[in-house]
Image (tube, rainbow, N blue to C red):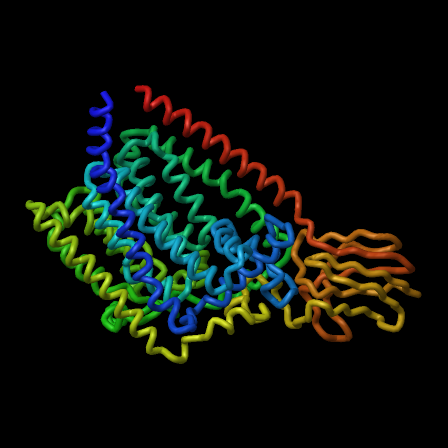
Length: 562
């Protein structure tokens, strides 16, 4: 009996080793595709959005270190005035980076290790997502993970643009692809994959959520016959959408509340227009050839597109549809599409039409792994195709990193990032500052009007809490160095007003800052408490998540019993 157990264990080990081998490859590829450009001789490549996301991580780490586990206001960004990144840029996926920072790593080290973990997760999620639809095709799953994880536009987002939101979107998009297929064409009872993907996408990158909705709308339109013939699919789609709205309520409800409360810059004239930022197909091709550009799609996508169209009728239905959708979104990214017709519409919030490259990369990565790979009749040919394409993409990644190493003007010493003040980390758009805001204050400044009528003493600031004593001979306005968002509260003794917009000071605009009017003698404390909508929406999202988890575990157990 013991000998039989020993033999069984000996036979299990090779099988387990084969199962673990892909993850080892993913771990190596995630490292090789990143660290040549991320950590170069004590310098970091200055990606377009790098300072903003480093500021988000640093601000979140500071809040966590002070015991604020769900911060809505980032007091590192804007040099202490407080920017509502926790409301308009959900921090859910940033907690690992912030915890690494708290654990003693430098800001650059935390960011670099975090990007590696996100890249590794991208490979793994892509691999497992493919297996959800093709459980016996591990070679195809490996190829999809490698092609998708090494896709040129994803690496451009990671390395050149430092577009962390889109990087996170890349991580979860395979779940949306699989979930959408299950609801529309497969097992509609597995709609929860779509909910998981859309929820993760919302908390990773809001703009990509809009792109995903457009993708799902076109996919449903392409398969409208399935939805008509099986109304239960529509019910599953409704359940996925409803649960997603409840799970993401903790994010979108506070956003809506702030946008209703006051006008923000995002509501003014857009900074970017799709019609201005769209480029020609020739320009995108030139960027792919140079392999060093902010919207680098990669030569491989153009090659796969042409091959897919040439072999269109040899592909199965799903891969034909993905080839079509990939081509459509590539077209939408170009100036061939009349973007000027949408300059004044909601679609313009996407800013750059080449964001659609995320979907182009996703669609053609799947077509390569599931469609083109199956056209090879012999396993040897499939392995050769796998190897050649993987080496091509890895080589392209290394070439990109070597070119980045030659960009001396974009390589910045680590120490520079550790010494960031936070004042200029809001990014180029500053979309969620109060509209019309013109002034800038230091974090310890307190302005009073009229000055001669107020005696302010014992003023202190601890984290986001301002405390002071005052004595006035007439009503006095106290203007605090914090940006006004709904949720600031004031308490104390004496006579004081609610928190309101400062307006002007001696003819100078102080619009967008918090103001409290006091009179007489007393003490005052101002802090950000949050709102009831923030608390209620968080509770609804948490309860929905717990309920779905219990339901999913129960359904999975019952399925195993059958």
